Length: 358
Figure (cartoon, rainbow, N blue to C red):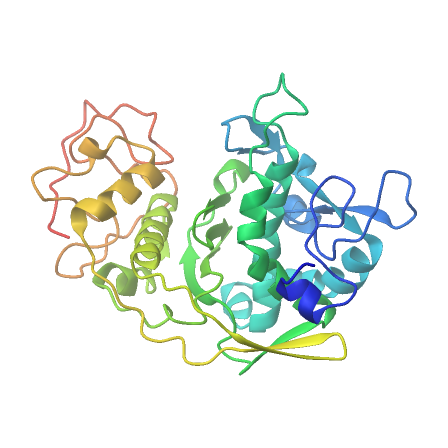
């Protein structure tokens, strides 16, 4: 007899797996079912606004998948009834700019960003690790989906089946940053996540957000010289990736698995959050730079030497490193390439950047 939260508290909703199940409520929607629809993981309105319809994302096996094909099975009640109003509110805020987006209801933000995070995992659980073995091993095993079942349980808030108390801060921390925009669609969007920690980074035109989906507001008051500077700047794509790397590293080294009291009444569950505790943890430079080099897509030795690295955001005194446009190329201090998105551009002919202590 199942004893997970879905079965204990929600009668008609569960976490199910496979191409004939709604990724939100778990109902059976085989091909041909009148209830079957598809949910675009990155919503269609966002793909249109940023001209990303034919853009591509790297899967875990490094194959490319077009954003327009990045869909998951979803029943019509979940798609049109529960998720649609959230999309309407998020789209309106996006069109109004970063101030409106950062002022969105935290529940809407959690559902919208949490749906993207879970939708990507679900999509990769449907795809074969090896193209020649269509029925073989998946990119994401079912066991990993089960490991994020509590996140899926919280997503039932979209239909009003789960809520939490207190209302704020809610399940997630949100870090907002203003970013430089560009006319070219290929430069206007970036997405990063971590399958082992519930964190995502999303850059959409002028709006950048890093979200830790289940730390219950713990990280929002984190103080670090570079993060404080980044909140006062318009970030270049390379700088936004540095921000994500810093928050990702600090999230993982300070992560605490928190248990929650859940009260169930009439097919509705209330999660009692409690005190999330302080966001604390050591910042070990030679550990952090491993995350940074991965995010910038350059070798570790290109950004770290003899206990030194550098920041694209500010120097050790907090002086901002302001980039005028996307055309600026940040160079690896100990390498011969730029940093993402210029990681394939040779900079051997340029003067090296002097690193500063982090």
